[in-house]
Amino acid sequence: MKALVKRGPGEGLDYADVPLPVPDRHDVLVRVLRTGICGTDLHIFEGNAWAARTVSTPRVIGHEFVGEIVEVGAGVGGLLPGQLVSAEGHLTCNSCVNCRADRKHLCRAAEGLGVQRDGAFAEYLALPAESVWVHRPGVPLDVAAMFDAFGNAVHVADTFPLRDRTVLVTGAGPIGAMATAVAAHRGARLIAVSDLSPSRLQLARRAGAHLTVQAGQEPLEAAALGQEQGFDVGFEMSGNPSAQSDLIAAMAHGGRIAVLGLPDEEVPTDWSDISLRMLTIQGISGRKVFDTWHTMNTLLDEGLDLSFAVTDHFDARDWEKAFATAAQGDSGKVILDWAPRD
Image 1 (cartoon, rainbow, N blue to C red):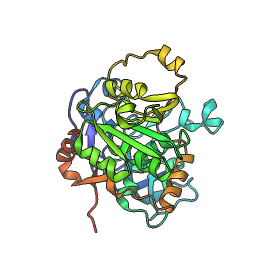
Image 2: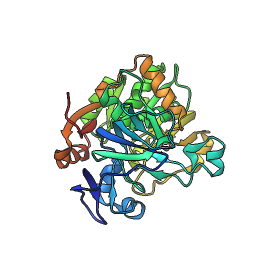
Image 3: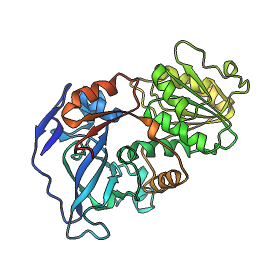
Image 4: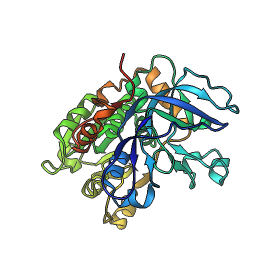
């Protein structure tokens, strides 16, 4: 079968033939239909410092996907060939104190799909049945393909109460835009979004942002946006050190911040300012397994429309163009098609 493979250190990937995976007793085999390109995949392509110390190679990469079950292991119950599925990209150990206390999102021994275990950028994928999420009928394939990323957005947006609050989002990439959409759906009174890219700010407006700020060209101070007391809630989605510092400065006394973005360098932080203004800062990684996934289904059932988030489609054979588009930093979610579209 064809797959995108990271062979070793340095930049690049190979679109190559690899053996068809063989599912174990408690695994399922999935025919991959579509995949979403994530910032993690771009880091692996680049071979940055994180990828060099984290990704075991050779490795089929990718973790955002939707596919169809074609085979189930002898020990698998409740899953059937033909079901449309995605999966939790963090494969947990099930034996640590957090896993045993039903806090799997805090598992310290979790393996990443497409990082420490072969991933979804392939025609077929084998993975543990316990990590599989079965989609309800009617979920669009593009939305299903980015359920993992949608889960990041929901995990961030549901960290703090949002109804009638003012919200500042730094970073309007696909996850930031989806978090904006969730905040609007949750009844935030005012949502402001900042980003370097005018295209991504348009994405944020389609998601429900009331105000947008082009980072580097417009001030982010809360007073400049008419919020003299500062913002109630902040979502840091960019990983940009300047954005993180500006977000903290724009918060109201007692403000609460959820941080998903991962900076490539240390961010100077005035902890006395955080203490004196009594700010709460909550780190976010991944999704709550599987609480967040059920919330995602509920949001879709309530009419949340994520179609705006997908801006580009490519055949998997054109993966280089797809990665280049995603790396430019002004698109929404970029989807790779691994099977012909109807």
